[in-house]
Length: 72
Image (cartoon, rainbow, N blue to C red; front, side, top):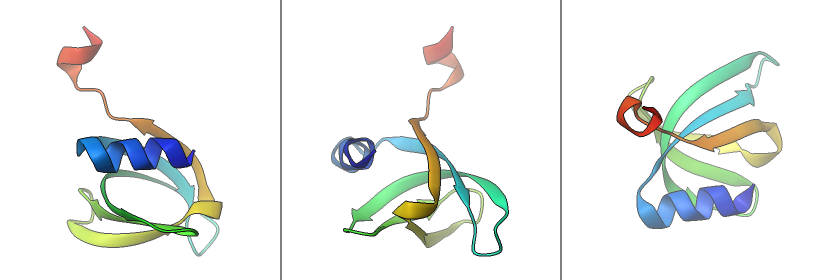
């Protein structure tokens, strides 16, 4: 999964992320990666309108965002 984050960082590509938050709840986010560390991803969250840190071990799914134009 690291390659998805690295590629998104290089290409400034947005990602749809599903992860388990600190309370054990599933959460979906729409992010742009700012930095990739060994254990975490620092990213701008478009839903929270702020930079957030996500633990890699809590990420369940990460897929490049595709606009409606790309899907059609």
